[in-house]
Amino acid sequence: MGSTGVIDDRDRKILDILQRDAGVAVSDIADMVSLSVSACSRRIQKLEENGYIARRIVVLDRDKAGVPTTVYALVKTAHHADDWIEEFRRAVSDIPEIVEAHRLTGHYDYILKVVLPRVEHYDVVYRRLVKRVELFDVSASISMETLKQGLAVPVDYAR
Image (tube, rainbow, N blue to C red; front, side, top):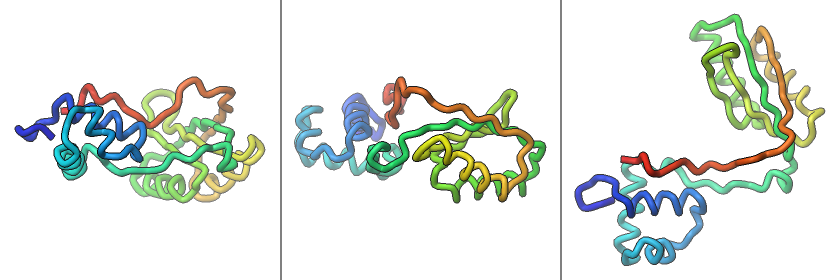
């Protein structure tokens, strides 16, 4: 991080590089941001210590992992008590095919991103979920084509 402890443009560039490929060598990153390797390494360490870098992961090829199909499930519930919400959170966390879950405003309460070996497997996931928690309505949509995908977030807003 910059000498003032505030994130600067070099830090943003480092974050951008790392979130696109965490395996890039520090020496290569240092070249890209015009820093010495030791200075670049210190900045990366500070970015980690200050929570800008939450974790480093490997992103698998979904076709090779055997889960090329994506289904989005929109969930409505009649329950909003804390204990139901916690059980729903646990159920979603326990089902590995559910890779994202978001609580929503509007007509539906939750949206789940489910990755599957094939569309027919959705019923297996659905049955596991409804065994754990009572749901009012679930509407599923199959993703026909991925137009944009990624985990990278814009770094321009980082402070």
